[in-house]
Length: 314
Image 1: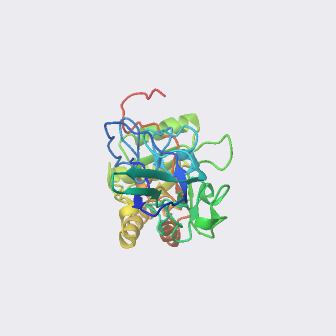
Image 2: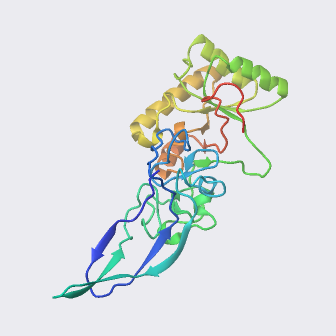
């Protein structure tokens, strides 16, 4: 991630004093790190884009789970906005014929947030979203609750049919989820979960690792349902919802839910956006709510079994 630093303009009146807000910068090196393109961050994935924070688990995001304790400042923005400070920078140049004094000021205020940023340096959140204490736009309690900046967006609960969740609502609880199925290992996995008496949520695709309407795909989906697990949508083709049109989003979501309904005679109510992209988007929340979905489930721990073979050492 490259740190968002406000543009600097130089003026030449005799003395100018301005008030600006300083943002804690990410550390930099002589060798720029690559920008992450997969929603992850860290030594193997690079820096979060667009001023996002890199969580201790190596994911890019904008809530307290990403920007707070454990945030990796080498790979993204961390921390909250600091108090406003008043600064004046003066310089004097003297020659044998002239003597001039100039002042350099930093211009920080803009009307439109950069990406999903907000606050004194970025402006007001669009589309009725909230501006969190960390200076990001979103619609969950992390953005609209304690520390919400009411001067740069709305605060308090939003009346939406659809909400995003990135953690359990009660302390001491956890939820086990699996993505991108159906897959060749799912029947063995289901046997193991049954043996351990554990329930999980499976966010499935239509055509990623296995065609959901193939005989094997149908068998796995039916088994997931019959064993009492929750089936959620992960889109038909694993599209990036943040970069897709409303028409494409609707087509992809409906295609998968119709396939699921043809197998278990029920449509999913939960979904998980591929790559975690689009979470906290009020526009996307409205689209998904209109389609009948009630919740978008993000994650805050990843086993990374999709990335590495064998056991993962934490």
